[in-house]
Image (cartoon, rainbow, N blue to C red):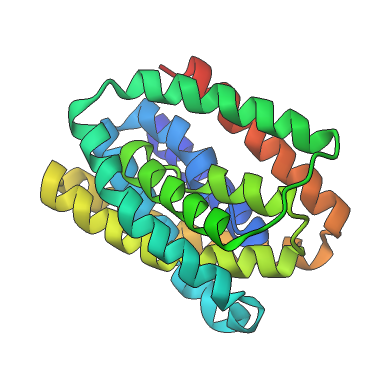
Length: 237
């Protein structure tokens, strides 16, 4: 019973964060899901629920999507996805997590001190590739996108919409790759079924929060999410 309440709280808070920022479900949920589930189950629960949130939101926010950036992210991710599953199946993922965690913390500090990134077509594609690699290897597509878009000072509406549109593809492809190459379990899908009503509540509360969050507050949220991610990747081995 305590595990159920912890699971429900994790899913609710992560759903609110994902709905209100476009990021955060995998970043917030994965560390805690790994306390309750095997890595394979935790990643697949994360992928399915994140996909559900993206699908539920995209219809109402599709006009805010930057489709040119979306297409370049898509191209990059197609290259990154298979490399990610190769890392997951054959390489010491702990070493990758430590390296990524250090990089995220360094780049977040640069952003906090007003370091800015110019968006270019090639960089869009590269970020998409990194996001694809991170999705199938550690279940976290968000950090490369969040760092890049925040560094480019993208408006919160476009940032959230473009990210969620990209997630529709990246999560679908990653889930397929995970199931085919790593397998799946009944426990994962039973937990997903239990979580879906909780995600629905999170969608409602997160949309209310988004309407009241200013651009400045939104930026602070992104820094907190990134720092939390970097620290987790360093110590959550």
